[in-house]
Length: 328
Image (tube, rainbow, N blue to C red; front, side, top):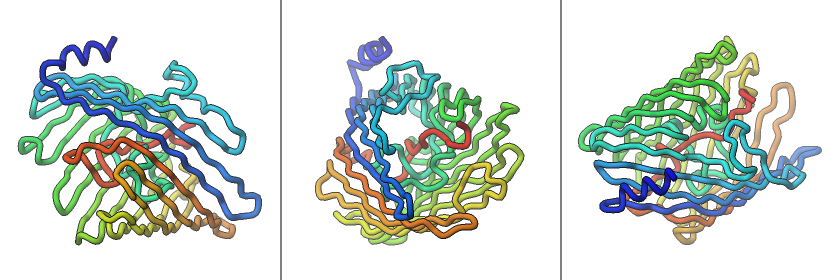
């Protein structure tokens, strides 16, 4: 019903953008007892908008996992949908030109990386990714400056479906020819969580052959401090083959987020055609009190390319995390 109403209201003057794709990924620790784990995902997306006017977005996913027993992933119990559909987005709103109000299942504009592998630098996410704010069942209000070409500020609140806790958040998006950021702050005010965190996602474009990027978080969880940062160097970002190096470091003295102390990655993205992307990497992860663990990972994605004017680098305002292990 919601989708039908949105299309009916927008039929006269609407921008309809379909999307989605198929991705297969896997990872193998090269240590004693390491076991291959992976999954496959099918995604269908659609966004409908007019300015000013109603806006609608739906991103639906079906995921199957091998870890190592094959089977469909269970969805978060609070969604109440069937066993394989997990909305990343399901929202309806109104765009007033210089502002937008929206509600439903929303991904606030936090962080550098996206859910979808075809928007990533490497087949593995940064350590900060899984503990960033998740999908929010609630509402958000955005302000656009300089006729939409300047910063975007947003505030919102609701229920984080991945942390399973109430959330209040604010975020800013800035995209220029030399710099971009998708950053914000979030508070989980419930006594059982008491989490306060700042999320940073940024890209810097010093030359055509190089993109420097950072994703990170810092804050307090359950009364203990934590911080983690991921730094990327992406070479030849506009070429078919993009070599990538990445280093990570974390401060988590009380293990409240379960963060590895450090990690290093080297890999590449290969995009032979605009609808196909292959990501490969080798990595080394530090272990407190033990030997570092080497590993390899890959990802293969076939997807609907976004319209040229909406293409983004690996980061973006849609960059949002999967369920947060620390909250489970």
